[in-house]
Image (tube, rainbow, N blue to C red):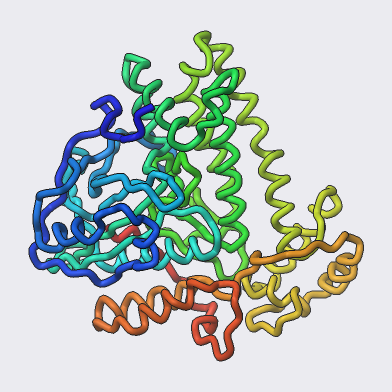
Length: 463
């Protein structure tokens, strides 16, 4: 099976070179990540980029895809990004090398294809933090200041992000492939996905139904992990949902401080479609869209295909619930496998919401640590809840409750210092601290924050 994306049907991409940025220079370089690709000509590729050369070792391309954006279908594609290469890691896995903010492509829809430096650095912070929190994600290889100004909120510094991913296949890629009259494009994409990500499906009785089940599984694992650490993606459109199960496309994302299930920071999500506890339901909705795209391959009879796909998707709530409450039990150090246990967890969350307690610090407090911004004990219901903890079997837990997360206040402060004041010392210190999120540190300045700042805090795509 051919594993290069450029060997797929030409309907799925268009050749496109990145813009030449003659005044660009590197402001963030992920040395440790580059070392995981021993055979890649990383230095040479970035010398071409920084020096403004259009001579790439491979033909760059922009990937075509569609997507439901806030529930509405659109034909999309890489409008500000290009795939420049595919590198094999030291573990033998193929990874896409992608440039974001690299200029207009045939899919730009009248946009300039550029990105702000602040937005690209924000993705670097968030993606590396998510990786350190042991959650699947695209990774930031480098960020460049392009040396020019672009028009967003006034004139802003331009930025370019180089990232790697298991792949950039999306639910929207399958949506796009399914719009073609011939099933050959869809089949080629599905076979490519199986060969690259889920080779075990190839030998299944129904490989494409097996593929659907695998993607449901990895998406459940991903969303459960997001909710473990209070992460809100912010724009869970189908074109931002990775087939590999990685966190992808960091736009208006943020971490929740004070617990509120309806927390939503995105300035464009006015209906709170992608709020914190709405994420599982949206994941199921997206997976149904994926299943619809895949149906012609699942069975030749559309009615039978729908029944088979629907059976898989309808299992999502039960599968997610089992995984979610298992995770919550791990955060609390007990085994949660009964309805009574689930109700006990929900009672805790209710108390946290009522007392406006910090999500991250609450679980550290329950471990016995002295924490600020935790008001659980002030609630009369807490004493009874705490006493019931002895009703459950204790379990060992490790690397479940982070000590430090990218607090909104700190992310904005670090970005302002780096971009506006050219102070990179704080940026590097912050990145270094986020590399060890489960380790306590004495006098940890990055754990100090003002929760009131979140009352009016908004995130923006910024690209």
